Image (cartoon, rainbow over the protein chains, first blue to last red):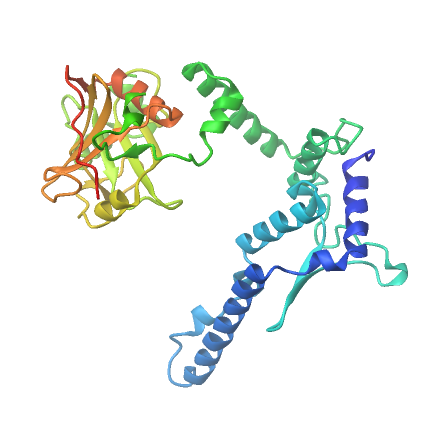
Length: 213
Length: 164
C-alpha cells in the first residue's frame, strides 16, 4: 500500500529495475517490431536509390520513431508489463520506458539517473503540463490505484485541466442518461459497450433455440 | 423532435437544409424515417454500421436520429463490402450506405431484412435475426419503434436451413 500515486509509481519503477528478466519482450511484440524496422529500412533505401530521379517515395519514407513504436506498440507494452508486474496499465504508462529491439531480441529499459541508479521518473513523462495541470494518465493511475487498493489516500493532490474535467463530466452525464433511458445501471451499460461474445445480428437458422429468447 | 429542431441541430438555414434532405434522400416536404447500413464499417472486425434518420422520440443518439455499430457474422461483412453504395451518410458527405433495411417483429423475434438485388444468405438480399440480449439492439429497437420503423407480423420469423 502506498500513500500516493507518485510514491506507488516510483516504487514500481524500482521494482522494474530490479527485475530485468521481466522486461524482455515477448517474441510476438519483438517480431512485429523487427518486421516494421526492416520494412522501414527497405523503404528508406528505396527513397535514397530513386531520389535522384523522382521524389515519389520521399514522403512515405520520411517515417519516424513513432511509426514503428506506435500507439498500439505502447498499448501492447502496457498490457504486457502490467500483467507481469501485477499493477494497473496506467501505472506502467506513467513510467519512462524505452524499447531496445534488435534482430535477436527485444527488451524494455526503464530510464534512471546514471548516478546512484535512482529511477529518473517522468523524464519524458512529466507529471505536469506547461499550465501546471497534471497529465491525465497520472489521474487515471490514481483512480486505478485506489480501485485496486494500492493507494491509501484517496485524495488526488493535483489539478486537472478544466477542459478535460468538462469532457469527462459530459461523458459521465451521457452514460447516466443512457442508463436511465434503458432502465439499467451504469455498470450494465458499460458492460454492454464491451465487444460482445455473441453476434448482435446473425442468420436465423432452423432449430436454433437461441432465437426463442 | 421537430424537423425544425433537427435543422437547428445541424446548424443549417432553410435552403441548406432542403438540399441536405434532398441529398440524403429522406423526402423534403415530409421527411420519412429511414434505416441504412454502411457497406464498409470501420473500427474493428466483423462490424456492421447502421444509421437511422428519424425525428420522433428521444431515444436517438445522434442529431439526425440513431447510429451504432453491431457485431455481426463475417459473411455479412463480406457481402456488404461487395455492394455499391447508393446513399450518403447522415453524418458526413460520404456515399457509403445502402438502403432497403427493414425491421420486422415476429412472434419469436425481430429481424433486419436488407432487400437487395444481390443475393446474400437469401435470394432477396440478407436476412438477420437481432440478438435481443444486446443492449445496443435494444437501443436500436426503442428508437426504431419511436419512429415507426418496426413492422409487426403475427408469424414466426423465417429461418434458413442449417448449413452443412
